[in-house]
Image (cartoon, rainbow, N blue to C red; front, side):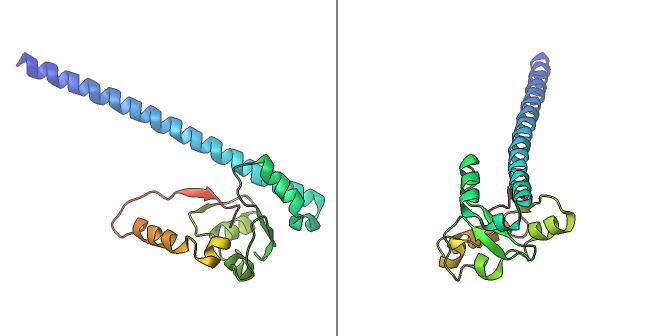
Length: 166
């Protein structure tokens, strides 16, 4: 009987310690994600403020956008759009028929949210409208993965990314 009680106490202690380690890991991960997002939101806001200060003609100034991209190496592509969501310019090489050139981003929820609130918005995962969307390089694979991810009955949390390159 004493061994059973000792075993139960040991198991309970391990469970408590494991729960505390899991909580510490989750808290640390949350804090790192917040720091990452805060840095990128600040970078987007700084670019928007710079473009606003310089004037609307700079929204299409590729040298400025390219230099900004070099300062923030995690930004693969920088795209500017007008208040109607139509493409002004992008640092990505796009064919004439690219969905970003043709449709813009006016229907994207992050754009609608940003226009409505006047604040930086972070999107759910979206399939980009850049070069890969127009030439099919990876759009089909992304769509299949997204359908699988969104399969009915599967519980999941929504990943998020900054919407600076769509």
